[in-house]
Image (cartoon, rainbow, N blue to C red; front, side, top):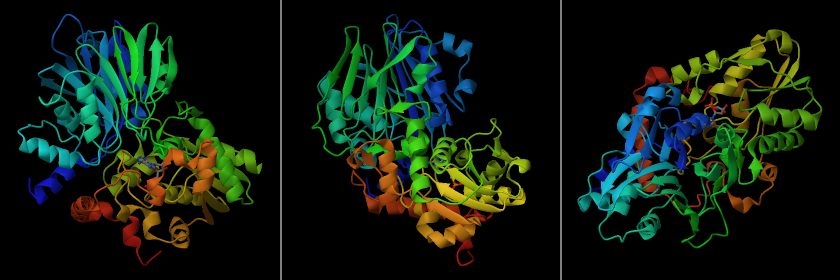
Amino acid sequence: MNHSFAADAVLQHRPKDECGVFAVFGHPNAAEITFFGLYALQHRGQESAGIVVANDHERNFKSHHGMGLVSQIFNEHQLAKLPGTRAIGHVRYSTTGSSTLENAQPIVADCSRGQIAVGHNGNLVNAHVLRAELEEQGSIFKTTVDSEVILHLMAKPSNSLGDSSLVQALCKVKGAFSLVLLSEREVIGVRDSLGFRPLCIGKVGDAWLLSSESCAFDIIPGARFVRDVEPGEIVVIDDKGLRSIKPFVSKEKLGFCIFEYVYFARPDSTLEGMNVSAVRTNMGRELARLHPVEADLVIPVPDSGNYAALGYSEESGIPYDHAFVRNHYVGRTFLNPSQLAREFGVKVKLNIIKERVAGKRVVVVDDSIVRGTTARARVMNLRNAGAKEVHIRISCPPHKHPCHYGIDFPDPKDLIANLYSHEEITKYLQADSLGYLDEAGMVRATKKPENSFCMACFNEKYPVAVNPELDKLVFERRRDRADSLVFAEEASPRLFNGKI
Ligand code: AMP
């Protein structure tokens, strides 16, 4: 494969999959349980979903995939066509361009040892290189998803059968991966050795469950959380039960994505032993200590700022109120691809109750600022509603760098904190003051040591090396694409250069 083709492959792989995975072993209605699980994990991906099932009576897996929300893709009729006691499922969110049905996961492959299916949360940083090698050796890929590389590596005839083919494949891939795999006899869960993305184990009756987040167990009648899959651990579940394999050298420094606590995971999940809402409340308390202000009200940007605002209010003694009303029938703002659509999304999503803020000094708390669209719109809403002062508080540090391990941020040219100074951003947002939580406070809020986390989107310390040359090409290509969207880009902070 020549260089530009390799770069093209990266471009195709590039869509970083913010995803959710779920698996069931040993339940008569495995597809239905997986459907419930995916329903609870919907926040991790809304573009496509799929379920693959296996049963003892048929050799071939049965599967159904679709674009859109879990509830739109599956119904009773669909689920009835997926009989089986073992299943894996996946919800996916990707960036524009890659949103096709063929890329919906779990991906199924036939190989000499039978069928295998994989669902992946995370992003492999060397998938392009491995894919090029595999294609040179004759592998034919059917998706542009990096996770397919794992299936091809496992299927290679040179690999022996059994667990070792998985271990051998995993030794070659680099980056972030929480995986669920389905083979003809087993369900397998894997977490990369730095533990970038979450994965946990549950039980319902005698059946085993795997899920990206524990909140999925709460909504399945009779299900309970057992434990997290450890970083670097493989759990193999078959008729004999669950066994754990730890084939990789354990790392002193881990790389759990701290942004899962800040924003991505659901507040009712417990990740790595800490409830997410509790961490967010702690972040709000830290924020109040770091950036106090005299004000009359603390209000969250719902839902992402709810718990941090609560913490800010508790710590500062400033009353907490809900002035924004959320329209629950609008998806996440980020899902809209163009800037114009995003701005509409921001407006349609939240309305303000004027009576609650008129004449007041308000502290608005949100989890993060990415492009600045949301925060700017909120300040405008508040000013139009008659707020006397608007102070923005953000429960993580400024986002300045891309994530290479599975969180989809725009490229750095669209990250407002990467472009402008604190003063410029405050001015752009038209806020009276702006305060971000710092790294130390964010880590303290988790009650874990600093070396537990990947915080590369804040500090550029990437725990697994990435290939900047190929990434640069990716960004070049993305820029080309973005520049043609002049209209859509009109409100982007980039165009305010010099004016703010
Ligand atoms: P922005 O309007 O571009 O500054 O986006 C900030 C909002 O997007 C915040 O309110 C966050 O809750 C949310 N957000 C932050 N990161 C992401 C992400 N990677 N995917 C989706 N939403 C995000």
